[in-house]
Length: 314
Ligand SMILES: O=C(O)CCC(=O)C(=O)O
Ligand SMILES: [Fe+2]
Image 1 (tube, rainbow, N blue to C red):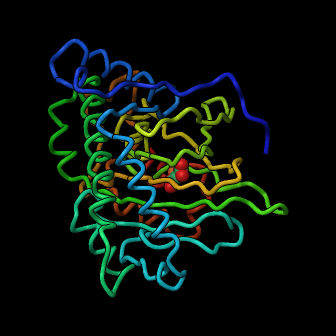
Image 2 (tube, rainbow, N blue to C red; image 1 turned 90 degrees about the vertical axis):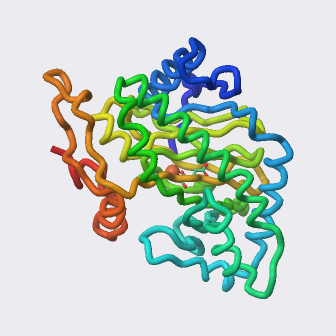
């Protein structure tokens, strides 16, 4: 792997009560910052003060307990939806293990998952995890609203976000052994509309710029959440926002835990007509988000340079 560029750094944008009142000057300023960061790198760091140190600590303790379960229990995490179940024990990404939780912003969704992991009774895993996932979903909705307002299509926000379903993937990257490569997860773009990522205090996420340079994401705090554009918002925005390639490289001699939460829209996604004009001809046909996921889950489509372009590009 090539060396990392030191020239790039993700913007850090503050999300606190004082700049989250729609209609205020500081709300508009934050909308501008959000869109300019997304247009530049496809992601940014939200400093989200509702996410407390206590929630952070509680959630990652719960994840440690979860990943300490026997593999034969963890593989019971299955779903009828493509790409929603257990992933691990894969020879070319040996450090990586993850599980998927559908309807992750609801206590019920997490309880359905927890019942499978602890069939004989039960701890308070769901209450702990939901204290994070609800905040992550809320943050994502604020960001989406800001993007819509900034692009002058606020009137489409409610109907789009009303159809969002949240998949949470909880992840563990174990530390590499001395004879192992430190690749945690391969380069990819997310298939979501948007994603949020929160990590324990172990770094590893790397982002690719539009010019092809890779850089690491550092100095995250317990209230930092990375907000990242997925392929679906790239299509919806008619390529104004690009979903960035990213990967995980393990440097520390300590396990990394992270929580990625992905929004999927259970409706047809189409570019608002306001975002199509002579200078911005329509780049993508309308598509069903979950059918796109189905397409991507097929082996022959997993290594496409851009699955979304192949799927519905004009
Ligand atoms: O663990 C991370 O920081 C990133 C995970 C990721 O990119 C993904 O699950 O799509
Ligand atoms: Fe990702």
